[in-house]
Length: 584
Image (cartoon, rainbow, N blue to C red; front, side, top):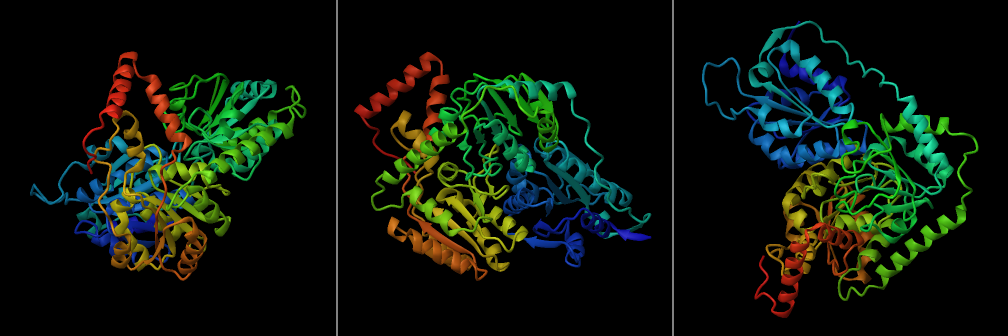
């Protein structure tokens, strides 16, 4: 049979269950776009910027079982999408990145977009392929998908030259996709050692990352059986429901909320599942181990990197937890635990911290705790919340209870601003019947706000709450203590209303605490009519999160003594003689 490369690529993507592709058509992929618009199962989505396309694809992968897929032009499209691809790479999110390529049947050089894309993307993709014949297309896309979803997931890059897309060639009838083979068996000795440590621990604790999202039900069972407090990483925030009495919060060291810090203070055995003990997860490495560590992860390369493991188990979180539960004795040998005391302490610590935020005087601005209280009350339980990168991210983590698995997403280890606006579009496309709201700082909003045009065009009812304080607040707060001024972190005045008018979104303003409930209700009502809504929130950032306070202390504590003296002396001097100006 004769098939063009574009026809073969479309067939492969349909076989893989791809629901959406994101990108912009150009001279090197128009044939593929022409095929995709005829697909009965794939919806090609044109975006405003390829960076937005990558964040949309990321959100599809994070919130659904369909892989996020890019179809972008080579070179310029790849560089513009690179932030989103790299975010997926560091966060362990599967993604297919399909790009055109220059003609390989041409005798000419210096073609438009002619660069070595394999070298360009090498540092932030799991694998890279350049198609050379029509016969390679279907098996290569199948292999790319297998690599993207297996082990620690991540993006895989496939370049299909324009001439192969355009011209037909004789090929055998393509085969259907067959799923991955079964995973390798687990180490029985490691499982037995982990069971022994957990059952003999006096105060075990659980620390969960995104890698545990496929095992939430088993984690609840295990936590209750051990009566163990549960903390999560930022990315793993949704893995364990905040409504559960053993849930403590994000992290558990000095940068964590009091409920987590206190519940883990005397932990003697830590079961860490699907978490790499990275900088954000540990509050800038402020956690000091006082426990025996059982580390479970699909990627064995993460073991013993930042914290030594007494037992390391390489495997899928669900498979490992099933074995741990199955192999635990019916009555464990641990000392009796007082269930009510631990749960009561967690509840009381959470209540006191929440009351501390409510008591904070926000003046004429919106108190974050009051905002998140009303937002949680107004949203359905299965609403998806998308956060960007910034101070607001940690306000969400500390003040907004996430109730369902994979219903909170945010950029994490690559820590890229500009994620929220496009990612919310990807989440809404994947879940059209569910409420989707974005929490985004004004600085991050400015980076990708024009992608709201895509939401308007597609009639997506998303609410974007723009936390507007006129600063890059996470950085500004970090600058204030050592420098006593804010260099290049003051934003110019931006009329958020103008962005809404330019993109066809509805606009609402939330100026004080008195506005919160009514504005949230109206925003969700309008979004329910399939129209995006931008809410300008006059947020109060004057109270620092526990995360920010803890990270500043941890970073200062790790400095050499001479550098500590220099930083402290400069900070003191600048309080006596303040710098003349703050600069934007």
